Every structure is written in C-alpha cells, then in structure tokens.
Amino acid sequence: MKVCYVTHKPNLTGANRSLLDLLDGLDRDRYEPVVLVNRRGPLLAELKKRNIPYKYALIPPTLNSDNKVLDFLKRVLNSVPVNRLCVETVKWRLRQIRPDLVHNNSLLCSVGMQAARELKLPYLCHFRDFLWEDHHRKLLRPKRVHKLMDDADVCISISGTVKEKFQPFVTKDVVVIQDGIHTELYDLPVRPVLRGQEVNLLMAGRLHPGKGQLDAVKAVELARQKTDRDLKLHILGTVGDPAYAEELHAYVDSRGLDFVSIEDFVNDLSALREACDIGLTCSYSEGLGRVTIENMLASLLVIASDSGGTLEIVEDGKNGIFYKTGDPADLADKILWALDHPDDCMPIIEEGHRFAKETYDCRTYTAKVQELYEQVLQNH
Image (cartoon, rainbow, N blue to C red; front, top):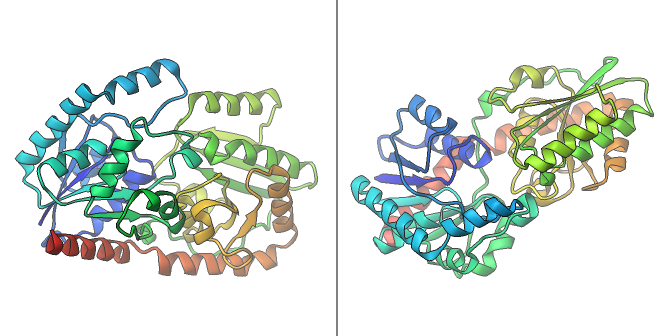
C-alpha cells in the first residue's frame, strides 16, 4: 500500500516529529510512504536519513497572522484562484505518486484534502492542534476546511480535548489516537534530583505566548526570592512569535535575570535533561504534550499547567504536579514545594517514567494507525 503524507511546513516541531515517529514504525514491507512538502527545511534531512522519498507541491498557509502584511499575503494565498492553482499542483503530484491513501498530517493541509477528494482518493485528516487556544491563530477559510474535514474518510485526534474542539464540525466519530514516540531515545534512568545547591529547570518548545515561557521566567524569579537554592531556568525553542520572543528577551534583560538562558531548539536534549531536575510544561492549551512525555521519560520531575491535553497525561501528585494555568505565583509555590520535599518527589518521578514508557511507545501508536488504514481501504 502506498501512502502519501501531506505536511504544511518542513520544520521539526511537534507535528512533523510525530510524523517521523509514525514513519519509523511503519511496516515497510506492507506500506510505501511518500511525503509532500512545500519547500526545503530540516524535515527533508530526516526523510533522507530514513530513505523516504519526498516531492514538492504548492501547499499554502491556512492560518491568519498578527502581522498585517503577512496576514494579507496569507489571504491572497488562500484566495479562490490561488487555492485552485495549489490544488492542481497537488493533484499533479498525486497522479505521479499514485497513492492508495492520502494522510494529511494536519488539518492545515487543506489542499491535500481537496486534491485527494477531487481525485476520489481515500484520505485522512489528523487533528494535532487547537489553533486558537494554543497558537492564537484562526483558519482563514473555515467553511472550506470544515467541509474537507467532514468529507475525510476518517479524522484522527491526538487527544480527547482536541477531539472535543473539532467533533462538532465532523459527522463521523473522530478517532482518538495519542501520539507515540521513540521512548528509547528519551529514556534516562531514574536518579536522585533536587539534592544539590544548584537546581536546573528545563522548558522546551516554540517561543510563543501559548507556550507560557514568560510565566516560567516569572515563577522562577519569584521562587528564587524565597530560597537560597541556585535555581537556573533553561529555555530552548525556535521562535514561533517574533514579538513574543522579543518581549521575553526584553523582560530577562531589563531585570538582569542571569539565571535564565534562552537558546535555539536542538533535536537531542538528552545531555541537558540529564543535568536537570525539573521539566516544565507551561502551555495554556497543549494539544497533547509531547514535551511532557519526553520529560517523564528523562526522569525529570514534571510540573505542568492544568489545561488541554496535559490533563490526559499528568495525574496530579502521582506522575507529575499541576499548577494553575497562567499563574506564575502558583508555579513558584509548586517549585518551592519540590525543593523542600525531594524524597516525596522521587515516587512521582518513578511513576512518570514508568507511565510514559508503557503508554506512549510508537510501535503501539503506529499499529493503531495502520489498522485505520486497512479499515479505510476496506470501506472506500
């Protein structure tokens, strides 16, 4: 079976990292993957490593922007004539590839869905984000996208909370399949944490208001005022919102917060995670929470906001600790509690590590997706 995967950006943020995990787990004797991308980017190097072919097509952005010039350009790219041109290029590629199934890696790949529908190819739509709640973005052509979603042979959601957001626009039942990851790549042995004078906190993810990096900075700043421990915050992430990234840097610089480091995201965080004690998830509405799972696997104490898909991963006091979303003071209190109770934190870390390894293995994830492929082809 040949499956064409359509992705809207060639980056290595969560959606495409999850796509790579899926591709890694595919039964290559049974499935032949091909990926459609809209331009060059770091994703292509990862596809080459895996010997997975890719082709280019015109895949326009489907979300608005806060930048007026960029928003205007996006609206032009989503206009009827330009969308028609993009759909035709995708159809041309699909005729070349001759797939049995088209898997759109995000609902943002609307031209992939439209091209598949017009060619009468079975297609899937994968819901990976809330859009507004996590990215503060809206669909430029919601009616068009909602219709394409509803016409899909099946829609997959990465969490129950994301399903709740989009189920009203889809007549078929949305299937929830939580992402799996290569647990062995992030697995670090459980070790004593929170014991030294220096305590390191890690936060990984795009620099974007919805990710809550500024809340983390303010929380650690508050916590440092109430302890003699040397708290250090490591923030890693590509810039998702330039204005927010500037605000974040300006806050750190203006207050002389030398305990905060802000670096570009790197694929392999294992060395840094091994040197850290606490992994933070401060998102206002995470679709699932891949970084939370990675932190559990790395045997960090997970402290996370009580919102979105994180609610489906963290059980407060059992495999992680919740704080009130958007409340730096409450986050500071949870950090201080952890500093004062290292022995009580160890069972939480151990359970998080066990839970993540048993629940989010990519082989289980891939098997469920492959089963859906078979069902779609049988019913088409």
